[in-house]
Amino acid sequence: MKALFLLFVAVHTVLSSTVQSESPPTPTPPPAPPTPPTPAAPGEPTIPVAPIPDVRVDTRYGTVCNCSESWPKGAPAEMRTFCGAWNCTIKRPKVKCFSGDMTVKLNSGKVTQLHELKLGDYIVDSVDDENKVTYTRVVAFLHRDEDAHADFIHLRFGNQGLTVSSAHLLWSVKDSNFMSAESLSVGDTILVEGEESTVSSIEEVEKHGVYAPLTQSGKLLVNGVLASCYAHWPSHFTAHLSFAPLRVWDSINHFVGNEQHVQKGINWYAQWLQWLVDDEEGH
Image 1 (cartoon, rainbow, N blue to C red):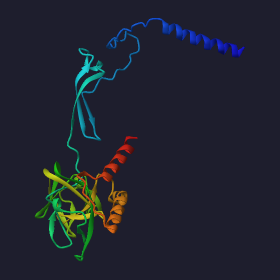
Image 2 (tube, rainbow, N blue to C red; image 1 turned 180 degrees about the horizontal axis):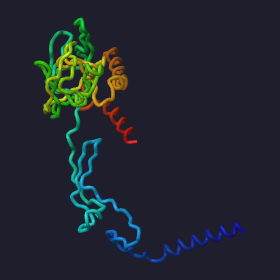
Image 3 (cartoon, rainbow, N blue to C red; image 1 turned 120 degrees about the vertical axis):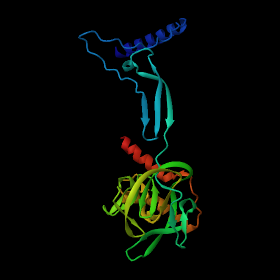
Image 4 (cartoon, rainbow, N blue to C red; image 1 turned 45 degrees about the vertical axis):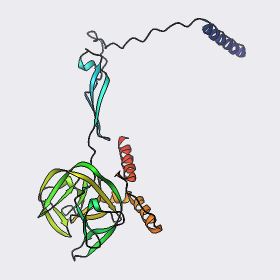
């Protein structure tokens, strides 16, 4: 009986499809445009309607979008739930580096600006209490763009200064650790050529060119200031550990004599790490 029933269902389905295929197609009317929801009668439950936002901001890519045409037209703002036209602009991305006119000292004793620095150069990365100097090799540029215009903060200390992005890590004597430049205040102490120096002023500036050299030690002296090679990280240690594969890759190429090339913009490995961090934060 079950087999007969299944056979009947199959035959009925085939016949129905045959009849439908032989009959002329019925034109379907175009879909009616959606209508605004009607207000609920007194005493009836209401369905919440989310109005379309006037502005959307994508913090990951720095994109700001404004809705120039919301729908349904003529409806109250709180009932416009669809945007027919977005006008989007991309904000200037945050920089993670120094301005190109900042200087480092080579192992030859020559002082050179960052825009002249090359891969493989050995630069000063520390000066101890006894004035002993150590050097480290430049293995990559985490960010290098000579055409970029970027916002920085300028720290004054004594007769000198340092132009650096706000999230870049600098050595703070008070915290005995690397801290973001934006967390420093007037009166805080930093290390300059191995000696303590007090920050006398802080101001925002705009400069041409952005440079973030990565060294084997993960630190360097820029305009004499002890700085990390990293920015936008919770700690120097975590960042240095995360960039270990890039330093190992450089050591291998340096050993076999392969020539390295500078990538304009943000380094591919730094981009991948940033994507990984953003993806984790999104979850």
